[in-house]
Length: 179
Image 1 (cartoon, one colour):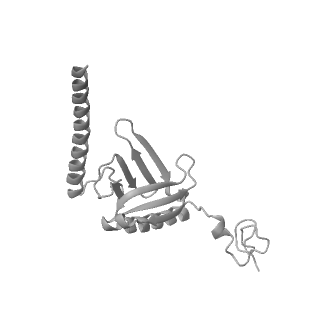
Image 2 (cartoon, helix red, strand yellow; image 1 turned 90 degrees about the vertical axis):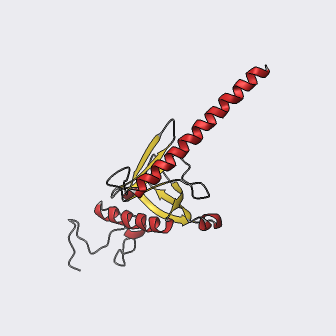
Image 3 (cartoon, rainbow, N blue to C red; image 1 turned 135 degrees about the horizontal axis):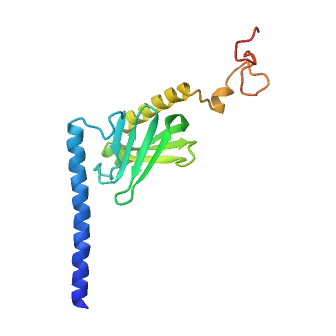
């Protein structure tokens, strides 16, 4: 029985060592890739990894964004790939705890109307203020490009007398009325 426990302990230590080696190799690869200016996806505007509270990228969660979509990749042995179109994002909030401020990190809380992802968080990322502004800018661009309007922007018109969300100075065929 004692020999079995020793063998089990050795197996557990080997598994932990392999896991740590995988993390170290991943960090080294990511650092060398960033120094060379290479991105995982050439068309990406932004890429990062989820980091621990010390700012180290010891995670298998990867984030990226291009002109039209946000991508989320999670997992090591089993990987899940999610994406949300930027025009489906309805709100972006930046949250920074004291510890995150000390280590230069932040967390974005994203509200979206996407069916599969719904609301989600982008945890412990570097340059979180710049990333929040990038998100806000690209989301607005995509909403305009796809002609997506929310109720809060539709009802802002002063000339919407019947409160249907459409200004009353627009004809039925989409042109401006003769008011």
